[in-house]
Length: 120
Image (tube, rainbow, N blue to C red; front, top):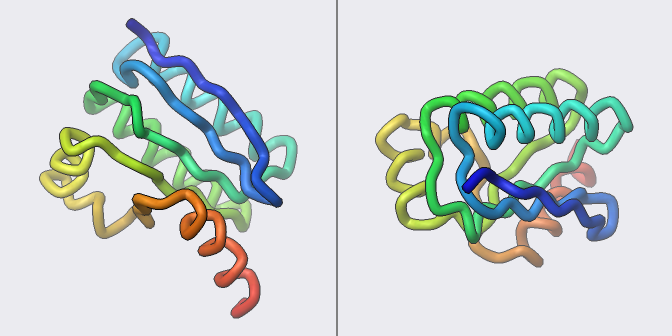
């Protein structure tokens, strides 16, 4: 099963609800194009909800890192929401847990975008 992506706006934050597997092939490519499209449309506060992602491989991690970098270069932020335990473990093993801003609560995650904008 490949990944599916559902986009929704919560204030000025675009939440991407991802379901399935982000792996080499369609899942990783779809994530890449989704993030590129959002940046091109000037939607730079992005929260990737991983609650129902049951598998992510190195290609999927690579696309998250590439997306994070691209969004940051454009003056935006990409944060992660609700990673499964398997994804959390992968982020810890790869030391990416220190790179990504990871949240377990959507309300607090969305508010964290505002608090950073207010201090800038």
